[in-house]
Each structure stands twice: as structure tokens, then as C-alpha cells.
Image (cartoon, rainbow, N blue to C red; front, side, top):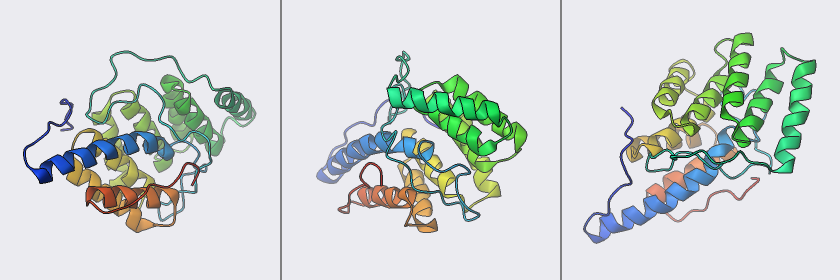
Length: 230
């Protein structure tokens, strides 16, 4: 079961204190990086090996209201992001989707834009529509799961991502998403294993590089996460 307990306590000893600060810093990085899973990646979510394309420079910060790393979902839901570029992108994609209602690639992009705008119900509905057109689409499934996670239903999200990994164990986006869910539940070793798996699949992608940076941080190695837009 995924834990929804409070933030991890400080423990005694120099080693455990150092680990606490490493995890605290990593938690911030996870919150900043999590949206890379669903925002700015190319439609379709990658090739047969489960890799994804590089993200764009837009949307590199997590929308407000995402559950905190310690597993506590926000008690109140802030107003959706109102950035003009995001809203303009949503309008463009809504128009494209109206013209091509069966285009899964467009639906994935539209779902991503809704997610960035924190319009979770519309994002979920859009990803479900994509799944009705293409049942079992792993990208749509993972991104729908991350909407659930952002909306506070991490248990349901974990089950959906696990189902994708059972069918497509080389899906890099699914491993990365599973790592975020585990880390949010304070299951650090399992998160590290999922990030390591994502990095090993293809270290050249943005997700691969960022995953490796998280593994390095958890192992106490000097590293730096990819800059925004990488």
C-alpha cells in the first residue's frame, strides 16, 4: 500500500541527518521535474523500447496543488494556471481535436495541456477518450495515472502504471512515473530502482538523464539535473 503519512522525521546520527537533507533536496527536484512526464513530450510517448522524445521548454514546473513529496495532498485546490501561453495552447489543441476527433496524438497533447493548466477533470476525460479510440495505449494510460496522482489518488495511479509495466516493461515513461509515485509515498529504495531502470533504458533522453541524476543524488554522488528545456 502507498503510504500517506506525514513528512519523514529527522533521525539521529550524522549519516541519517545527511540522508534527510539529501532527500529533502531531492523532493524539491522531483516536484519540479515530475511534469516532464506529461508536458512537452512528443505525442505517442516513445518508440517500441519505451523511450520518449525530448520535452519542449514550456511547462517545466509542477502545477500548484500537486501532492507534496511527503504524501500529503493539498487541502485546498488553488486556481488553475492562467499563463497566457498555456491557455493559448489549450485553445489551439481544442480546435485541432475538434477537427480531428479520432487523432490520438492530438488528444495526448491536449490532455498534457489541460494537466499543465491544472484542469485535471478535462485532462482525465481527454486521456480516457484517447483510450476509447486506442484501447490499452500505454502513453495515455500512464498520463491518466499521473493526473490521478496529481489529484491525490496515488494508489489508483500506481495500479495503472504497474499494469502498463507488466505489459511493456521497457516503457521508460512508466518507470519514471512509478518512481515519482513511490518517492511521494516515501518508498525511497523502490523509487530509486524505478529511476535506475528508466535511466538504463535510454540515458540519452531527458527522462533518462533526469532519472540518472536522481539515482546519483540518492547515492550521495555529485550530480546536476538537466536544465529546463533539456
